Amino acid sequence: MNAEFYQYMKELHIFIESQAKKIKKLESSVTELQQEVANLKARPPVQVGNIEYKFDQLKVETLDGTLNIGLNPSDLEGITDFTVDNKNIQTPNNSSPKKLFKRSMEIENEVRDYLESQLPEIYQETKDKLQMTIDDAYYQFIREDILKQLPNRVQTHLSNLKDGERETDEHTKQIVVENMKKEIQQGVYLFLEQVHKQTGGGNK
Image (cartoon, rainbow, N blue to C red; front, side, top):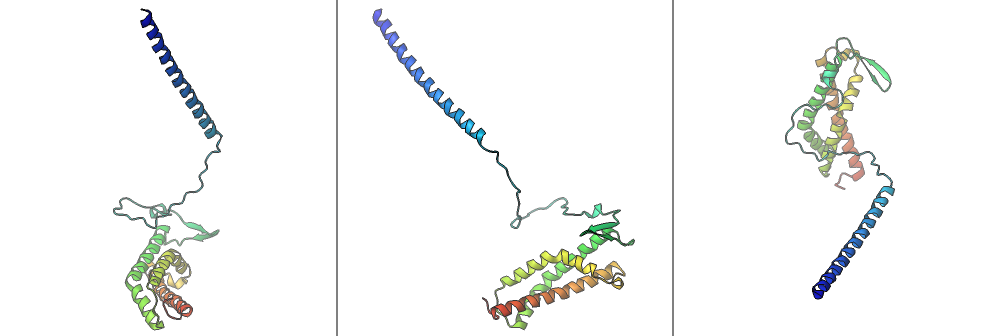
């Protein structure tokens, strides 16, 4: 009986020591966690500034719905004046803002079509005229630069029209389109001429 009791006490002692070690280890872990939490609380809050997204490489497979950027033509009904650069511009009684917006878009689209069909020929003819042999990367640069400037150039040409050139929307549109075609041709020539002067006509 004494031997059994002794064995029991020995095993109980071993068990208690094992539990004591586990408790000590847990206490140590709790202390470390408390210290980490205290350190995290002491850190200053993270402040995120402006986030800018660039969509140059965005590829759209399917586009559904309506994308509105800036003014929506349906929101222009009833508007009779705009304020641009702190200057008040009254719209003509026979030209609603919606019609003006539509006309600008039609002009821009027509000039885009002209670029797609005629710019390669204009570029090549200008190179031949200047006797240039340059990298065709210049063509892509010219094309993208013109497309980027289209909206502002359309508005500039519209604002520079004389009263006699505003008889009808169709007449106005054709004048602006023709003026922009001439401007594009002249712009390509002047740009390549400058490149020719800087590179000596070679592909440098």
